[in-house]
Image (cartoon, helix red, strand yellow):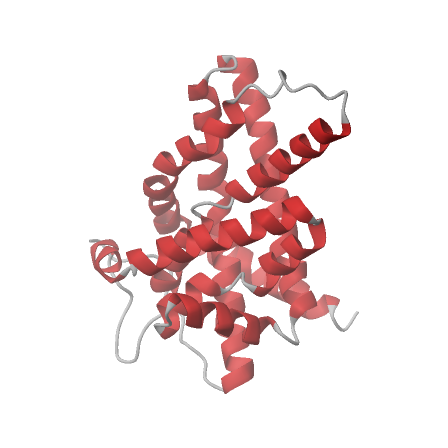
Length: 250
């Protein structure tokens, strides 16, 4: 019960922040996930029915492909979480950034690099043996906010994320894993609905992935940012102030 109470309290804060910021976070998600939705949809649309499942090697390859697709589904989440960290937190003496100001401040190179690296590490871990992938997902889950909040390098953000999560693994896992699994379930059902309404076209897979990511990923990003702010305060004794709800006009 002692562990459950703070976790539930954090979920309440995540939901409250998500609701208050939805007017700003959802348009940003549209900009990020419309193009990335196509990247997600391409492998999903591929015809896997032609794989012969009679042999053990083919079954292993199919399982590996499924795990790789699960990892590929993370593409964009890390980048988006980094962008959201700029929106939700403020530097000393600064107010909330505008959308235009936020676009100027995003560390595009580092966030794209860490996004792809994070996806690769998690996907390999999931494909080889499920547990390493889950460990990587949790221990490295705070890399994007660390880059934007603390100005870390790609390598430094990996190390810092591990340091922040260490000692709080179960709290971070209890927040991020259910959100990710829930988001994947929503994506699956959205894909099924789109398939029923639009057929098995690439456009249907693209639309379903984009809509589900726009709806769910902001919740994941808010969770990552709040966890990062809390764990930095716990480790260093300094707390980054959160911006008031909603971004000003650009």
